[in-house]
Image (cartoon, rainbow, N blue to C red; front, side):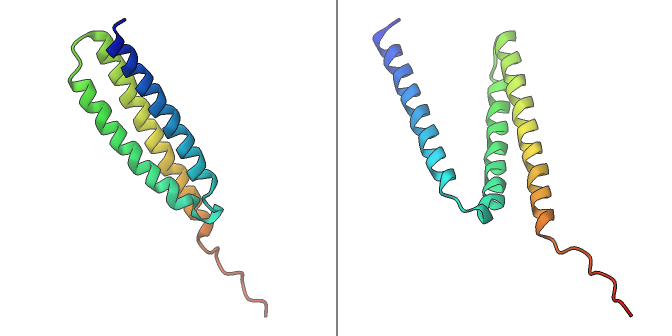
Length: 104
């Protein structure tokens, strides 16, 4: 393995660890009332990930790359769709329930 390739992997691992730590710290400090808008924003980001996976799938040359790209698109789409379902259920909790019947 060349030195440049090894350094590239080290930088990638470092960036992944930094992103994971930063994400944990940001999410930990979000108040409970703001979790619904946060999930909505993360669903938007998952949509961007699906577009990126589609782009990678269209650029794939080998069957292995195509299979990995297809799996990425499928999992990303399932994640985004599931996130929207959960967000919708969370928003439904904030809707007022039907008024109780008046006693006469």
